[in-house]
Length: 472
Image (cartoon, rainbow, N blue to C red; front, side, top):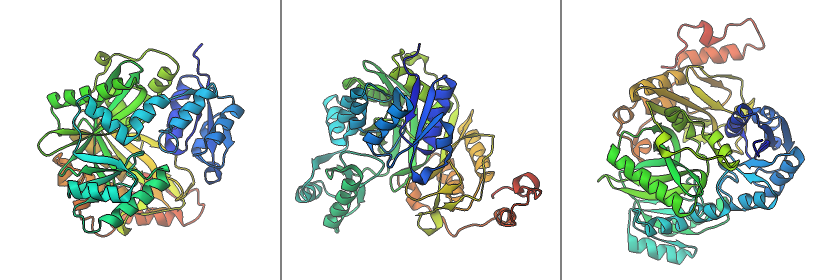
């Protein structure tokens, strides 16, 4: 009998639904947790058991829910407690399986400063830098010594929290204060690393899995299109690297994982500089938001692999990994790009996603601003990059979410830009694009008018009956 019989997902939204899907396919029981904001949400309805908690960040509440539901394993998803060594250790202490790396691996690689030291010790290139420091004066001295352009980075967490890009040092003290304040609020730790800012740079990451002894690489993803260090579009393979560089990146990713006896899923992130050299950035000790891109290229179920490794089954060999075609993912967020990306909230009046591509979503009837703005991931795969791009553009045009603002049209602008078509995307690309005024196609106006007619069940649905239902 497989040792994992019921999994509690310590998360919400689309990633909780995603984990439940693999668990159900494996015949494993499921349990969900939800807060007041997520009462009746799709993820709470997707599990066999759902338990109310006050906070997704409460380890005590998560463990109590696992006990109440009869779960023998916990999957942390991404965000919240997903990179918490304390949760990993608490699961061990409670006799539960944690579907993720060990506390030791998290402490070694989840801390940017510690991971940077490990990378340097095994000969993996890192950007010039200093730290970590907690004292603001020490941070300022290091920044002055390094000189602009530079980055201020949180030592103990990711997701762009507390990260500041300084092209000059004119307002250095206020930037340090702001960075430390954000970092302390997000991670309870205000230590900062001062590091050389590389420009133009591409953001390349390698998906890895480990079994505690060896590690394998499941391909790379390019995540250069990002805003405020939040990724918007991810793709695999990258247009920027050749086979020789790809193998160097894979080798570096495997070596840093094996250096700490890493087990389960992780992602090793790099910056690719203008000269073609790469620099270690960080390790995310969890499943990534963009993991579907790798799944579509490899045909592997990464969540299933996580569960199997946590359950003691052997990991596949590197030679068994085969990548085919090209995959691109777009993150549909509840935000208004035409008002400085202001978060949007409210009741969802209508939602429609096409069935021509993969859709990962946990969108319910209401969007709140308390949690992440991601409401769906739209992922396309094709034999070629252009085939995947066209399929994703078509899918975005056929997507409809009414009641809240989304970045749907902005994603189309990015995918149809010359920079993306030519494969010339960098971490600064999004900031350089003039998105102009908000376009409102007549088809959107028609859809909104039909929604506000009221509960007329005989009224035609726009994308089924209106010949012009395609966002141009």
